[in-house]
Image 1 (tube, helix red, strand yellow):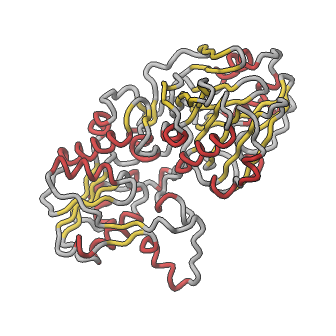
Image 2: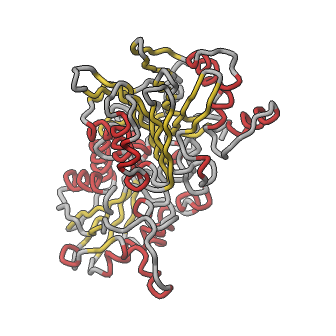
Image 3: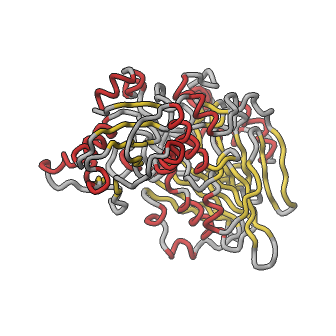
Length: 466
């Protein structure tokens, strides 16, 4: 994994989408909406703005939102509608043609498309489209949909989508911008979040806002209204707002439980649940399932903090920030010589001896994927003088990769698929090691075991193709 990605995790982020219609500051709101969702992808970003003359203005680039867009770009976004995307490539190579939103000039006019998820039958669709003469510009799965829309005989984009979306297998939460509409759609499983909100304008009207997470609404002063439902096409145009079903909701749904475990920002509502409260409950359940006598509970910053709070409250063991994270490390931290490369995790995490020395310490993390980072963290805690180190993971053992829009390690790189809990404990050098149960995790996110996809934990993949 590259230095600077989200604190040394083997899980790489997904993507985020954003869209707005009827906003006098559509371009700037899209910029801010992407900024709030930067945690979901730091590889590349793009914005497409619908100008007053009906044309699309496009700006894309590699890097973070704050670096790709300058004031000169924001000043050119003069229209009242826009969509945007931040990306971590889960399919397709890291090249300019894969940066979304993807754009095309179809018979129905200009169209831009931004997608979070993974179309698992894209390889089959692409093969068929190439035999029909399609020429692909990039290597991502999303481009398949543009080619399918281009071949549809209807001039109505909604009719095209209703006929085309049922042919896609897998995860897709999308926003689309035409010359006359902002469109949002979500796969029938509901794998990835997609939410609808409103932003009040100076004239009293309400702009429509679509985002992957509600934290984007908080930043721009928008009000959360509801989720875009699985199997729904929602669109807004000059005539108002509309909603139709292109497919029945799959029963059960397959909301990604890892959104609550790790991916989403803790201040978001995802699948109708507070991420922060869900993570606290996971920590609380973990304390109930695997209690231990200890002096202090500390989180692995930053994603382990809510679970550590929950563990501390339930167990009665005091919570402390025993590890301090350096938030000012850039994405491409340069290690100037081989002699300091062994510093590794020390560059980003610093243990506090005043908190840890002579203590029995419970270390809480949200997940344990490869085990190498956990090993280094435990070593740091011991070097700071901890008497005992008890490692607690606020999710079950990760035994399988995700095929629905998350770039995860291969199965043989997942330590829990290759070693027992005791073997992992020995590898990371913890005095004790325990994971939250699948049942405890499901109770923390609302108790509906059948409504979530937990394939990376239990191997039960909702679709047959991946």
